Amino acid sequence: MDLRQLRYFLAIAKEGQITRAAKKLSIEQPPLSRQLKLIEEELGVALFDRQGKRMRLTEAGETLQKHAKDMLRQMDDTITEVKEIDMGLQGRLNIGSVFSCASLLPEKIACFRDRYPHVTFKILEGDHVVLGDYLADRSIELVVTRLPFESNDDHAKYETLHLPSDPFVMIVPKNRKWQQAKSHFRLKDLAATPLIALKSDKTVQLNEKIVNECLRLGFKPNIICECSSVSITIALVTAGIGVTILPKSVLTAFSIADIDMFELPDITARSEVGIIWLKDSYLTKKAKRFIDLFRQESGH
Image 1 (cartoon, rainbow, N blue to C red):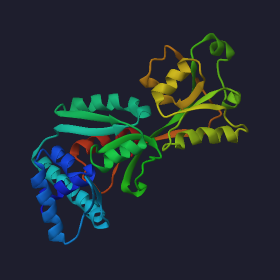
Image 2: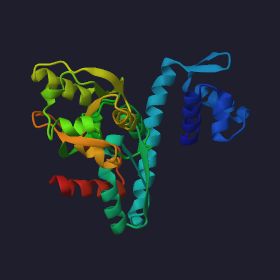
Image 3: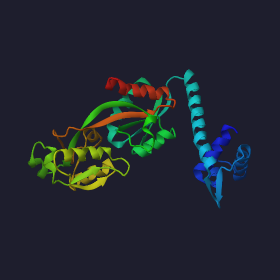
Image 4: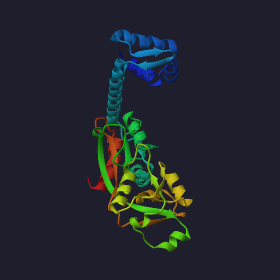
């Protein structure tokens, strides 16, 4: 069995159908079927349960899938490492970021491009689960994110560089009602105020910090809406639906024409920020140098 056959097998496993896998691989269906038959004959096991056109992995197939992914990833890392020996810093650096950390990127990318003008960037945005999947399949090398990183993967697989933490602030619509209310607020002043919470089904820790602060101060927050999108949360605030509490740095990604921000001195919790990457995967020179820019700032 060779690497080409492993790639064929993984394509069939992903697509669940020979026809679709052949289309993805840009080859004809009969040769792909023959290659799968050769693999099964060599191993002496059935890798798929055939159910009409659908193909589901057997237990043996699931085992091969896991190890095949690891082998191909190691081979790709080896090729990249060998090429980098004689290459200067060039090519594309693929990174991920949650939207609430997007403000951390422009300055660092500009600085990096000044030093290494032959490196380009691809940035993928998503929640922790999506970005964790991108890391696992090597679509990206690192993630700039809120901590803890709530992916589906084992946290022991990640290396983390902790960055300076971020205070929480209250964001309200810019209108006379709020401007005339006070020049400053405390979290406990918001006990009856409609609150829009930044939360998804899979990423809950940021919201839990705020809820726990409210409970510590003796009240249960009046959450009228849970929203997984920072942009939609801000839009709802702008429309006067409610207020929200977010890490302060989030606001640098928005125009502040329609919103006001108030510090909340009675919140003791802060939003933790960091860079995540896979411990046991090869990290390119580009990625290492990019992380180093953040490392210098954090003092690590």
